[in-house]
Length: 453
Image (tube, rainbow, N blue to C red; front, top):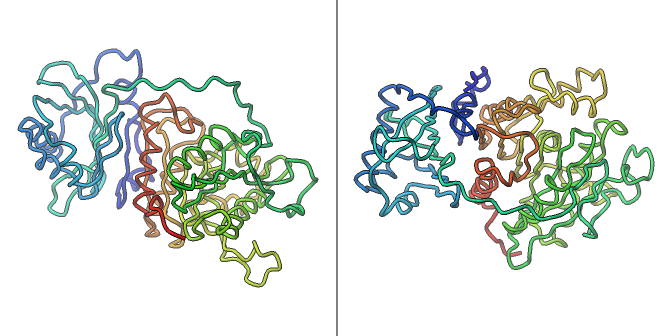
């Protein structure tokens, strides 16, 4: 594992779920073509007890004892099943399971009251590993380490369905991913500061209403990435909207204005207007105006984090009825997001296209959104990959730590490997778990429970 920065060390002191894994270790255990198995790490006694107790309960087929090793909100995640959350559900999950088992650690770390163990398991001691695992841990009130999450890191990986045969979508400054689906210009009479009347000058939302028999009333404004230069409107827009619809959540894919033609504040104006528009037309679209969130990838994640930290309650006296609506999202989902514009860990391309070169230092500070989190920032789900070489994982770590300090509920997942720009990550058995984890988080917020109008 790469050494954790000061921020990462602080982030490890969790009050919400944090899943960390270590690239240097995972490179040997996860990547195809790896050589000899990683050596066994010597665990300190309190962590060794976790594995010993797990082994003993499994060998004795004692589901209650297994469940007691977890925190009250702990969960189990395997590559081919939905997450199982809570001790009672975990006990039911393990009922009837058990047998010979030998666990060993490849790596571990603890920081304050949080930690993890990455390791492998075999049927018997001395036999080759047949699978891998990551346990994230939290120290309980009595000082004993408890399991927050038990993640299967690759045993019995299922075959992934082939991607549908189609011509690849070409990213551009105009969103053309949605065919003839309904869309709405955010400003039919022209956006503020518009430099023309071409498609790139007309921000819009494309509408994906959840099926009526499944609709929960929740809605999400989706911000595709693209470095504030283009929009990745297919795998970070259309496909995300379709996934949200499968959960009963309506989605509105945002085409926002981009550099070099537009700079800040145009993209933020567009995101705020999108939230206001969905809220203002909530009754028409069957949406609960108090359950409207924002989701973004990469630079779209920066835009989403900006909307989550720079908002207002609307202007009650505005002649434009949409402007009377508040622009604060009720929740946020940030996917391998650009958060900071400071070096490091800024993504220089996104900063350049948003602010120009050289950028105004005051704007760099203002739009480094880890510095703008307050108690009013909405609950946020974040995920990233540890070896993202385009947008460093520190962006998510910084934002999560800011949420923690502000007392805002947050959930962060860091996967060991994965290139930048994965979207739903089809074909990656580990990272492709993020939509299920996000759905569990949304369910915990009550967003997936259908509400009668």
